[in-house]
Amino acid sequence: MIRLEHIDKHFGGVQALNDVSVHIAKGEVHVLVGENGAGKSTLGKIIAGVHRPDEGRVLIDGEPAELTSPLDAQRHGIAIIFQELDLFPNLTVGENIVIGNLQVEHGGVVDFKALAAFCRPWLEKVGLTCSHSTLLDSLSISDVQRVAIARALSMKARLIIMDEPTSSLPDDAIEKLLALICDLRDSGVSVVYVSHKMDELFRIADRITVLRDGSHVGTSLASETNKEELIRDMVGRDISEMTRRTTGVSGVRLLEVNGLTTDGIRDVSFSMRTGDVLGVAGLVGSGRSEIGAALFGLDAIKSGSITLKGQEFRPKSPAHAMDSGIMLLPEDRKNMGLMMGMSVEDNAALSIFDRFQTLGVIRGSRLRKTVEPVMRRTLVKAASPQIAVSTLSGGNQQKVLLCKCILPDTDVLFLDEPTRGVDVGAKEDIYGIIEELAQEEKAILFVSSELPELLRCCDRILVMHEGRSVALLNAAETSQEAIMAMATGQT
Image 1: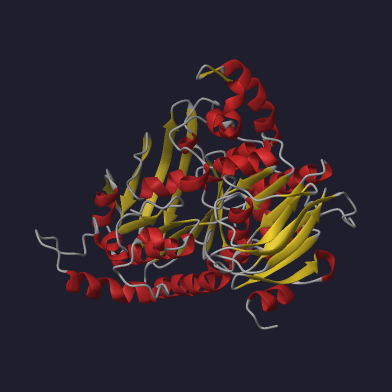
Image 2: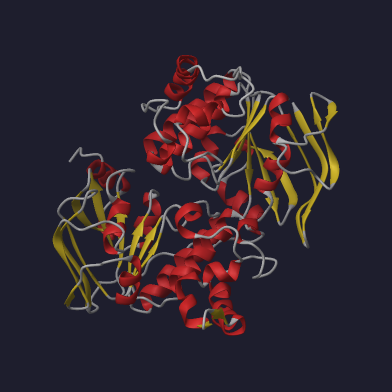
């Protein structure tokens, strides 16, 4: 259906793509894999008309095509679901689906009945039960992801580019999406699928293309390769997987939570010692993130108690929480974690800016000397610390967010999905950083939707179900099946 020939793309002094040639067949699922910054998203955006190549050409149905904008790509039957969703939080679900949609007749007056009728089948197709009139801002991040997918499907595209579409979805929604992708393929729709989740991609891929440092390493049939070969092609080396050291968590008691209740959680209790890595498992909406919101002063505490370093603690605000020794890495890096228009180094230093200002003026040289070692430690890849953080790949943005959390040198870190949108090599880097922080006697709460990484990195796992803590398990003595049974209320 579409062929890209000898594509080059530069952003300033950075070469994002170098002589990349690949073709997408009609009715196939074509997976793009590679490390963060390998060029996957850039290639997808060229297909979708977001970026124009510096060199090379695009052919659609064998004919040269100029894709000068996403609207132009839509006319050719191409839609994209961005990793960082491009929807409008202050508009309704239905308005987000129809805005700029060529399948909808636009006039001077909105026909709300027609809008509802248009949206309903697409919302049902992605498993959303909310009304078309629901404000997008009131939905969870996983439901917003599904709205984006419904919007792409409603465009009746012949080719849909999905950039990390499951990064914010719970397991049941992932299963529905993968089944939906198979249905699309069977109906002749092509899907370009960007993902770091190996188990996921082998279930749906027809062919897999590997990119490394902007170059095309190779394309193979999914049935003729395996996880180990792909990882080796992606990173150019074998990855030695780290395993969590076994500890009895015998450090000094640092944090104790008893009967913690807010609008989002009820009667949650646990305790942590120095060097403890406590995983938090549960379905989306189970109250995992709400524990962090309570500890960090974002949600008002209705009842229960928190003891921090032997003293009663009641967070008044995020600033109070940070001053007391608690830091939060939020799940939504775009809206809650980073200032996308600011530089990489300024974002990394956001949590400690006050240390580098005199009469309101930031002392850049001192800031730089403090930030650079932490950026090296987290292996942030950026052409320059002064470029906008929005120009980095999603995985490198996540590492900048991790820098921001490490720099204040707090005692307790609440990491909410710290490996979201991160490639397999970078995940190993982050696991190593978590291990180092534990060895430095930090207490770490680690929220993840990926149970294998909780089992691998944590000493114990707190299981949440419908806002309550239902189990506290020894990670070395439990299984994914046991955790999921408790998280879904089966036991």
